[in-house]
Image (cartoon, rainbow, N blue to C red):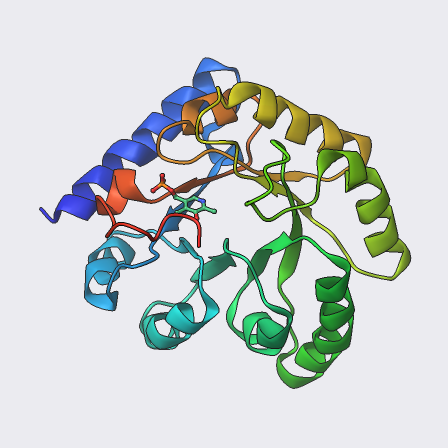
Length: 230
Ligand SMILES: *Cc1c(COP(=O)(O)O)cnc(C)c1O
């Protein structure tokens, strides 16, 4: 069997175990298979195996790979999990089903402009998550936790429909306090979707309420260096 397909089965079953271990239903957690840097031909067997939810971190790269794959495999749900530049919003709202990285006013303004146009064009628009920089790391994208309440309220006041929150905890700290913080902010605002947990820590994230885990290397294997979160 294809290596990625074999690892996909292992991760899927591990997610179900982690969920049931904390009295959650296995289908309460959606696996977002992170296919960034992987060629379409590497992704294809994973689609054949039945996986339909994928994450990419660059608009340009996704635009090269996914229109073809989407045409061949109906029901694909594509998540943008990397930083979004304002000048790529128009393309992103057409290509992605979920944008997980809304994190600043200029992006909100651009989304408010492009979402109605996309709705008129295609009859659908992506769901939106706010990225929270739970570790307040200067090099990382996301809204600082201290600004999160204000940002969420201002997005809603301006008419943006939000589905949930996403975070990438600092690499050198235990992730659980970051997951707990994200869950707490979401609960305060009645936001249902919690995208948290990656290959190394999705079990902990599931214990703390993740509805979506973003798993790349545990499925597709190691990526070339320098393509972690950029
Ligand atoms: C690359 C990436 C992932 C997947 O990381 P792995 O450790 O390979 O599972 C998850 N989320 C984001 C935002 C990423 O950029």
